[in-house]
Image (cartoon, rainbow, N blue to C red; front, side):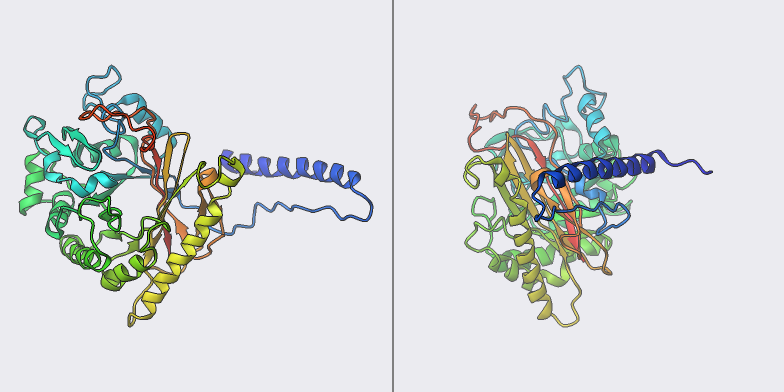
Length: 412
């Protein structure tokens, strides 16, 4: 007899144990019920699969926010740092978790970020004011350090471009710097920085929450849609293989919710692969501190996914011969000083069984959306108090902890 793989054995054993224990439980319940009441039955069938669980569900999101980067994953003066300044203890834990994808550098931070400040010799990198989080950015950790850290922990990079103060040309230049081997201005600059092989970054975000008035470079929907379309075309002229995510609504609380998504897609639908949606949950105002209600908030996320999907379908119906766009949404839950940010995307591809997610338990609910495949990305596993290095303030009442989960999913 061929040996049974350990993982399959454990799976079957767990299913069998659950069936036996539940069977005994149901029998006890049945004996306790009146004779005229039929007990509910639960049938476990581990061979019946409703949806595919994409490993990207367990991804992460890293931003220059609080101590997520500096004194988090990167701390050259720490006794735990390796020769590159990366915290070995943190890298080891992230590697053990098997985080499949990490988004960087933001977040609100990216809308005021110049990627050129964070590359090249560290002694030449400028100290600048980070206007998103009212702090000083030393630029000692930038694009190349992030890529190297991703390789160290065994994860895939998801880079966000600056479409706030940045331009479409800046975004295309970053793609050229990262993905072309040699022979051009920006690829040769990377080689001058000691990196001969290209990074080959596949996934890119076109800005962050550009509908929000808090965002540096905030734009009206159609203005942003045109800017995203221009950036997408320029980026694909450099590397046609990149996968691009446009900014959708920051949440249903926005007065432009759904209208923003429609107008953005009407301008860039055929140029992008996904549109993001965001939602922030907390076990406070929405639930009154009731944890049971908090754990059920994923049902609200289901409705938001359906609403954004309907907008995508509406715009698609008005586009001649248009294919399905990826649906990139981000449900978020903040509680216990942890900020969880989810993102789902719709992609051009053949129909595939997919999964939906439940932020409440940080686990997916397979099969809720049969046409969506979930891909996730999470911030940083570092949970430390944040103090603004410029003002000395510690805004614990308004800033979430730097532990963040971002989810990227896809609807086909």
